[in-house]
Length: 351
Image 1 (spheres, rainbow, N blue to C red):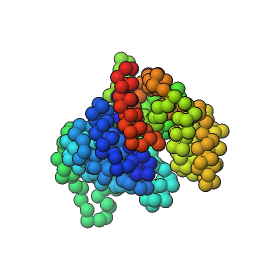
Image 2: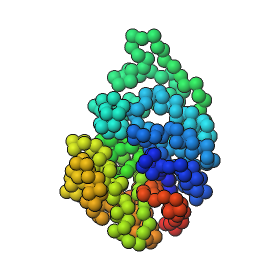
Image 3: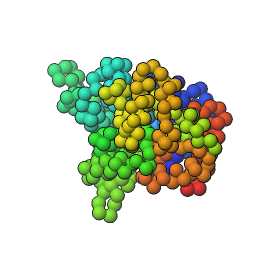
Image 4: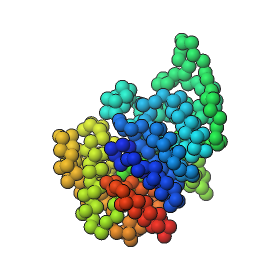
């Protein structure tokens, strides 16, 4: 298992010290730095900024929102970042959720799996510098009845293959990620509740023809788990640091009818707590929602506690099948963030 650094988005962890932190992660041997977007800062601009400040570390979008860009624009952006960075781009994609897709981008959220499959096929064709054509129905290219013609990306490839990752939470989306992507981006992943996750990913890989009796279909597939980290001897203090982050996703990233993170917490056995968190958050009481996040839920999806406790939890993530652990120093600033980056590098070296 290797380490990556998660920087989030502006207002959600990303700040003007990001290049220095990415440089530190590079010095400490981290494999990649991942940048997010919601409805504020965009990931592409930040990755260009970080790419200019680093030399070797991978540059990952976690994620480029599928409803926010046409597949051709996504391919153009990824190819450009890969070219300028000397082949360091890791293209993470995700459908976001109905609130952001329909409320911010004005794109319907229907058939997210079919839309993702079609989208990714176009992106791959473009990155492979093929003439791009698609019958639709979501992204018909060239547009039927129009004056357009099939075109080919003009940016020369920096390398033979630019890896594509899919963010996935539910069983069907996980299976799709295993089938059509090179890696999976997971959030709020608990090693004790991950058997179904990796079973779905394996099935997707088998559907795509990977694996055999002697080979795990997940060989060569990058399973990335983004994990909040708080190094502290007091578990309750660590819980309080991570709880607002958990409450935001479980309670606020979606509606009562559609929230992938609420559903994930429920599948892990925290249904009652997830329901209370969501009700408080959607009622405009985010602080109370954070107070309602139980220690057991934080402990399941984050790395909290003293060094030895965190090292043991890291071993569990590795044993579960995680190949890249993305360190998310939630709530930390300045020297504390730097200390987390350094400490995690030392801990993983001792696994």
